Length: 369
Image (tube, rainbow, N blue to C red; front, side, top):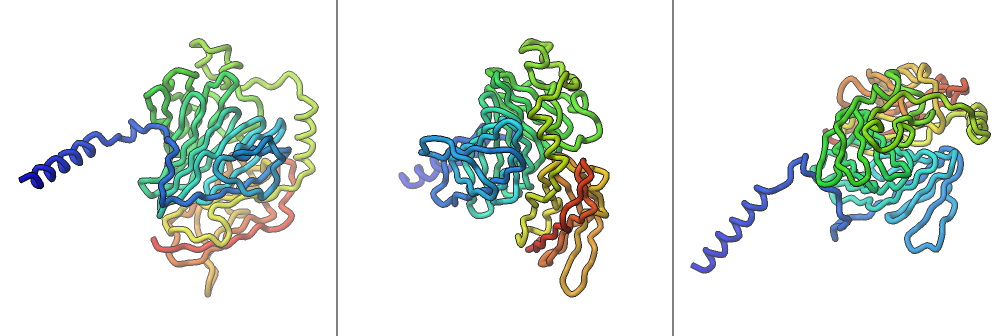
């Protein structure tokens, strides 16, 4: 009788726990509690331009970062003025850091098919391109002093200003943004503002802030959506306007522009990575450049995908360019257990008209469906 009573109590507890499981709208920010069976994963630093400094856990001070540097959990990355960097994670997701941005890698681990990446951005602007996370236990999250953004595969930006306010802009799919116990679902083409100590504002269309045609670089120009440039923290600050042209160009900005005119374009990151194995359902093939490219030269002629093996079969698809990244989207799912070759040709040119030095070619394969 006693055993039967214990069994009934245990069953009741399970039913109660399932009945109060959080829905997507109740998602809360992560608390870093790595599982005993989880594997910590490293990521890689790419310096797009300028200088980057690194602060590792337990280190007495900042040290210079370098291309190809391996980054572990607990490291802090700080881009200096007129500098940009790209962090590539083990699963192919990337986050691009604009100048004067500071970010900490709080978690980067895998457990079976589950992937978990948690970042803390304290200042500046970042753009995350997250691969589709199919496993229900996977998550990619950016925490800021005033909010958190949680996704399962998307393209979005996060901006944190000196007042600790946060702006999240969603380019693809949907991002859950939360603060002060409240969450909002932000669809593609919309942005949300979170003032420090306040819940998220209602989403508004990005088209009211930036041109309808994608700029060569999401970070070009000044961001009038910053709360300070919008006129303070009151209601008027919520009215986002077109960025006004700068009154003058600083010597540093002029130097960066001149360097970009002299710098040949190069591919600094791809998804999938070279020689990687990916599920056949993986659709978007991307290549990220070191400098802004001329969008008119990024097309199905300069970015191609072929199934290779006994014969070479071109893959039909479409090509887009945004945020330094070219994306080839196949018209249909890739075939399982097959090898593919992606190519960025020298027809791709920078905004200064410079071509790639050589065709950039990488090979990857598909596993099961």
